[in-house]
Amino acid sequence: MRDVPLYFAYKRTSKEPDHYQGTFHAHQGVEILIVHEGKVTLIIEQKSYSLSPGMLCIFQPYQLHHVQVELSAETPFIRSIVHFEPSLYESYFDKWPMLQAFYKRIHTGVLPEPCLYHTGDAELLHSLLRSWEQTLPQLAKGDYFEEFSLFLVGFLRTFKQLWEQQPAPPHSGNASRKPHQAELMLEWLDKHYKEPLRLEHMASELHLSPYHLSHLFKACTGSSISDYVTAKKMQQAIMLLTASEQSIARIGEEVGITNSSYFCKMFKAQMGITPHQYRKQFHRKLYPLPR
Image: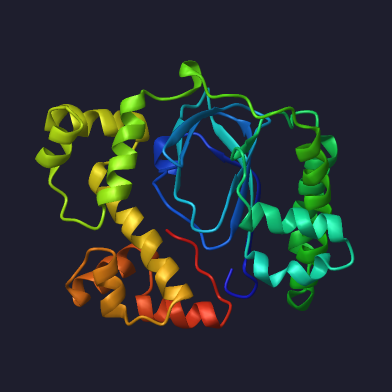
């Protein structure tokens, strides 16, 4: 990842809870997730989606999301992942204006839904993933960037065809969404994450007891309220680190952390490096994934 800003995994399998601990997080680049097997719930943009085998999901840069999984030996979570920094590969699409427009849309446009619902018969897409998995170990280091660029062009060409074949996005009815209270909780936190977290105040505004609030949030999202708030703060901090020249201390204040030392400590605990290091690596085109 530190040599070429990309990540790829084909049919990665998790069978036990210890093997997969999803949290709310966001990436600097684009992440494409293909579900092969599993009981999976996606929480994104304050909405919940039930994912089934064959579904493909797009996570745009800095888009906070959480993939919640029910794991057992009988119901493993099998998925493929393609993650890349879009700005580095855009020039490879110059010769194909329509494909380039689609490429730009998936990372800068407003998508009607984060998921494509019917890719199970898309054998060409899966053959591309299998082929790249076989090619990857054989590549010389100097060929890696060019070969991934070629893979990405082919992958997105097939992806574009699938996208255009999709019917109008289905409406999320009650059967495929978590209780409306969960969405209200996420909306409330997104508005108030910069403020000191007072559970009693939040519970009062949402007409719940603090105990019920905490347990309902955990049941619906798989995350604690405090973990979600931390993830939200880090998401916004990364945006400010990479898109502005504000000082580290000022960015901490912008996300509600007035103690600069504490902000740096929290950031490093979440990202593995300090805010200053993250900013430097961004300008060097090195992009660590959230832990």
